[in-house]
Image 1: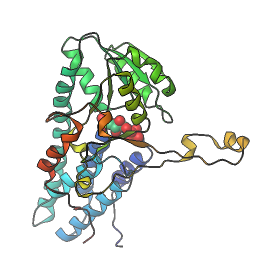
Image 2: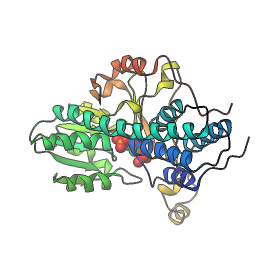
Image 3: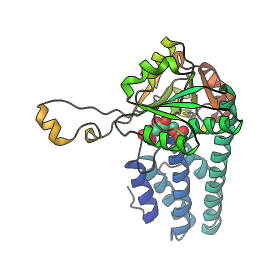
Length: 318
Ligand code: RUB
């Protein structure tokens, strides 16, 4: 494989995504698009072919960081599909412009879906959250702007405790927060009007791929009669699932679950750390996107509209 000279900021972004310093599907997508723009500005490729090859290599480097959130390849696809021109300068400008356009769309999509999600929430409602989703919080923010009072029960979300970020953001918005450990969720569901989660990927059959623990929460919510919605802008729709591919579930380091010393004290055990799980469509009440609210089973219609019958891989080495 050819060796491409990738700019330091691109390597830094790739590393930040891999180590979860940058995390959450929408944030990862925005940072990846920005990294491509920076790479385009900084590359000293001498001719159009070298420029295109470097940009494809940059996209591959970003693509390999985390496998589950489809917003990442969708962001790379958006930018690379708009890379056009017969000379390096024009190509460079096209990439920078596409990345900026992508960022604007990302922001607008989140605002629009927030308005739609907020319509599902009533004044005085209590929500339960899992992990930290900016799309989900956009719904709460819009509900607050509509003058509704919302309380939140926030699941801690082991092992990385992204619930702490959610708790902090909700407090900044003035929402009363009760933090609970994950295993306390079912006990508190009777006090909850809506479970509100985000998504890393949505499959063509309406399955929702989100932080590990979402599916168990959804099953419990259904059993308790509490509606559960996913807030997910359309960059979370996974085009490859239209042609039968499945979504890869990231397995992360066992050190996130248990430290080496405790593990040694326990004795010979296996430790596994899947980062995401799949919630079947029958346990999800609604998927809220910037294009409207959908029953999970009908999301395939929107996917076909947006992606046709599948998706290309513009980062592939030619
Ligand atoms: C994050 C996670 C979030 C989705 C949606 O997992 O599962 O619910 O990414 O987030 P991790 P957003 O912390 O492992 O990245 O709505 O911000 O895109």
